[in-house]
Image (cartoon, rainbow, N blue to C red; front, side):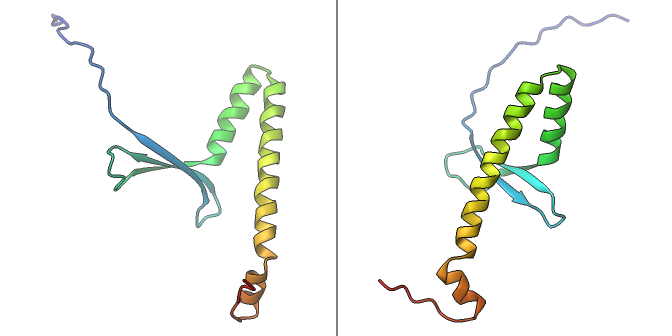
Length: 113
């Protein structure tokens, strides 16, 4: 069988993209990294990609375990702990706020200003 010659050409395309990210827990209790990919300047109708956070964690653990790179694993774990503490502090502040207490007792919160 004759193989036809390759007449193809490499082509570099420049496509303007804007990528936004978010973390969200879905209805099944799974933490997801959400990627919103915008392909035009209007900002309408992004493509959305949901990546379960545990998949990223699995990849990180597996790749660093193979390389026996425990220092990087500790560094990543420490950074995740710091960020989780920061998120928790904000959640507690919101939960303990005057307006949240007013909501709890089904009353209207009137700002003193």
